[in-house]
Length: 131
Image (cartoon, rainbow, N blue to C red; front, side, top):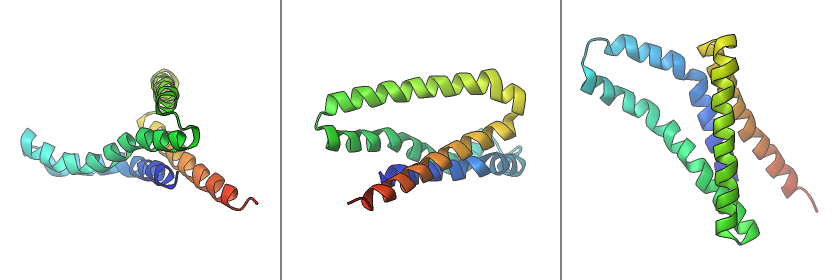
């Protein structure tokens, strides 16, 4: 669960700075062509995308180690992940973007990821201290 927590914190940190970073890169790459811009943009998104892609397999591994049932763990987590993604997209599109704007919505999402990671770390530490 530590790797999951660190992934979530990393996603949150990237999200907190991504809009400013992308704006800076847009200024620097203005007019250099699509291929060159893609070459500059790719390294900016590869790490958070890898972290996002790692969260579900990390959770499945953790759940499977506890339940000893891969298919049930995978099914339950995939369902929950899909439901959460759909709800988050709806919430952002319907309420957050219109009400808060892009910057604040990105900050809310970043804070949510970082908080989730920190919460997992705290809960994990609390379990280790139990008799």
